[in-house]
Image 1 (tube, rainbow, N blue to C red):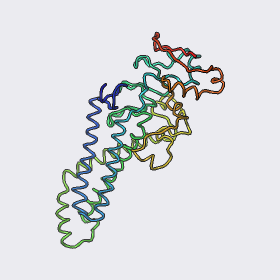
Image 2: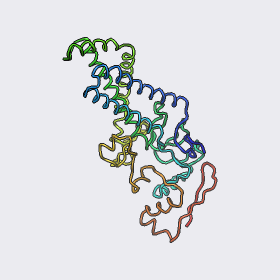
Image 3: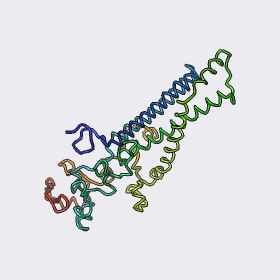
Image 4: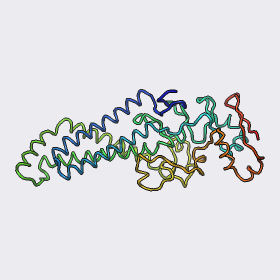
Length: 328
């Protein structure tokens, strides 16, 4: 069993794509570099160990930490890879059979003929079908899907905030150093500040370039992603002409937790209650426990047609996909 990977046997989810790993490393390096420059060259030389210096340092550190934690969650969270034992929902099975069977209508040949739920799409990088896939982002080295879309948006949000905070501090420091907005202090402090202004050089310029570039990039990303918060539609859904997500009353990005703290926290997973979970993901798993729970969720008329006993499903090989038959 591999320790890291995107296959179903992997213990921990991690895309091992070389380009994605490089981009993820660059992302962490740039965040840590900006944090070090802002704290050492700007805040320490400007405010020292004063209350305002510590307050700015703590706030900036929290924003950068939230950005990096969100990035880690987006990269290491299974975005919604469809398992090999996925099976259509009971109330969808009859519709698919009337259309020729799910083995012909909802079958992914790239995944070995397994069932592909509605709104699931095959990602060539992770080589898995991803639920509610939006796109593959090399910066987080992962496909963005149902269960990590929240962390991706939080990463973009906190990165944009850290870039804005960085630019605000640099501009304020520059204005102070050229004496456009004098800051009252005694002569000793003024002399020390004169010396600290001379330290602002190439490193600060690089931070400004980083802040402008990635600040604009993340702001554009948020503007592009914001419609999904209200429509539950991914980019692929919009390209296909969809008008509304499958569950208009449930926010599929942040789940059913409605508190602002849960939405903005990278420590809270995306949560859906059991009564709507299967409908959100669009499949059930072919385990004995899942079979029993599926029967309990069937309509009354479907349950009445079943005799006492357990439902067994035998799966064999078919022409295009795994064939199945339902027996009582």
